[in-house]
Image (cartoon, helix red, strand yellow):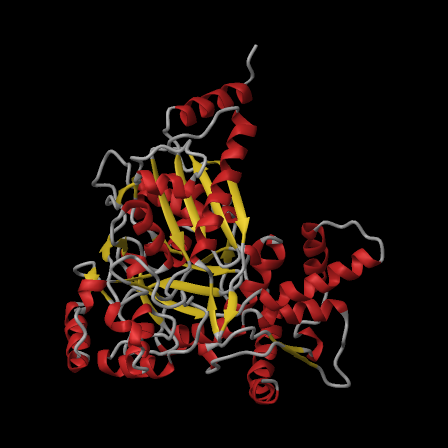
Length: 538
């Protein structure tokens, strides 16, 4: 007699065989993740592939060959998981969506050839352009935005600019190669160029200002000629081509013809995965970088260089505080501890190592015992640095314990973020009732939630599928495109699918908040040491 588990597994097997599951893949900073879901948003299978950026001639980049090798490896791992769990070969899905790290610069010529190495969000090399565009638009243009990279190339008189035929982001590039369509989700587009929330398109008045500013340069293109078209959530973004199917699955089993939704950035997928697309909701994505997004009740009073104004995948304005540096330095220290443990004969897994050591942070002093880390592996625009030098400082009377060391590493991961949030909270009066978290920072949930609650002084909750992250959020957007009733809007759709999956919030502990505030003050005083370190260590 078949059990309920057997019946459920058979139903899932049939769903996959009929090609009715939905696929989401996200190219994150250190991992490419794929998730297969059913029509109710339940994760059925997953796969991933690790990769790392490289610093080449002062530019953080990934090779485009690595993009496709990574996508194929991720999909292969997912297909193997499907085979292992359900005994079927994955050949088709009802729809799919691809996401990538937001912002950056991929410039292609008329033959689709890359004109200059892919510049990721991590680069802070467009300061002049960012400042000039912010003044021209009266709208904050951060250094990592695509338009800032373009204008900096123009200011630098870079030879490649005249040959640009298509300018896009990582998600836009992947989508174009898979479908032939020059399109991105409106949320991803809002990290390329400012979006008009009324039209869900690029702000045409600002487009005209930009074209007028560069008119004398004599380029053979206008801005809109080379940028991808913004598309709101729920619309179709194109169809998977034969060539695209082979890029995803070189074995040839995956069929062409699958509908793809508009590609989104990791900011948009984070909003979706945490059901944070309504006004007064917020979410924080914490991993290699960390950013918090609050859906705004009103426009900012003026341009704020610390705050990105982007939009949700369905076009609502969002204030985003983005820090380039979060867990990378913590991960480096954990790697050292892991090697030390191995040297002593410990067989602890990476997950066990993180769980044990991060738990220790909760036993440290409220303010981490006077220790100070500044974890800038790269530049940090929120505090005015174009490059970074990770450093650790203590005074002779600091309480240098393991517990305080780990607590300090966790606190410093969120100090730049807090710098940006203070602008939204204190200067703009932004309100948020609860922040929902996702990303690697929350793998040891009780620690991640408690530290984040202290840093933001806001209750922090986690979706039950937080570990699936942006790939799951991308799959939800691909599923939303398939809804039968097109009148259902994205917030209502997500409420129906995942509202109940949001865990109970962890409220800020007053002692933790006071300890973080004390650490935060020490952190800002210590930034002068970071300045000196950059000058001394070239």
